[in-house]
Length: 265
Image 1 (cartoon, rainbow, N blue to C red):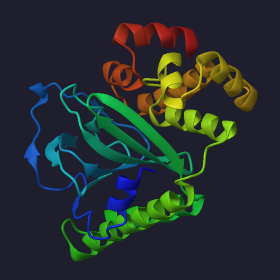
Image 2 (image 1 turned 45 degrees about the vertical axis):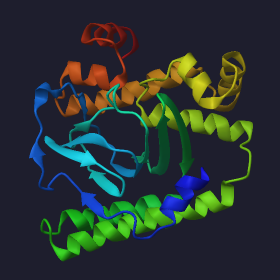
Image 3 (image 1 turned 120 degrees about the horizontal axis):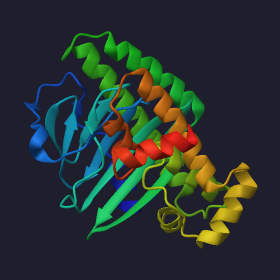
């Protein structure tokens, strides 16, 4: 973990603006050109540096340093970033199939980099339990704010420990492939072309493909399609439109998604 990021998350008072889908904010204008996604997995967005826009359940927020957004199951929220949103650091927490991942996205001068690491499985269970407690609290109540602060501080402290333990250790091939798997999963196959994964992993594409098949038993494309199929099945149960699913999975159009679905589902 970058030492500047570690310095920020070591400050227990840094994260102080806490939001969920019930937070008061300006109504979002659909004509603003922002794409929206929703999915079965919970997420938490923690803003380290820079300022961007964020849309949560139809409401518009400024994502400034110290902001934390709690994104519940199937709550609509902003997908990706606009081209003019540059120079920021965001940490995304992904609650995914019994696992909890942190994805640190750094964008500087138009160049992006991403680091992904896992938390202990016990943390996934505990945070989900606290989240359910939070949902049962009245909006803006002291009990709800206390739970939001607790969850934030728990994540902050675990990231601090992770950064101190792993800041100087190089990752093994197995760990790199695990990172690639996590990247594909948390993005639902979006931005997961061989070229993108080559850039993300730092490995030559042919070497990466060989390592991935040897470790997982799947080709990269097979794994991407497997992740996409699971997401499509979940989304269709919620009657989410084909257009929304297509863009969330990274297809260029609903027609391209329809052709993939016809061949792969």
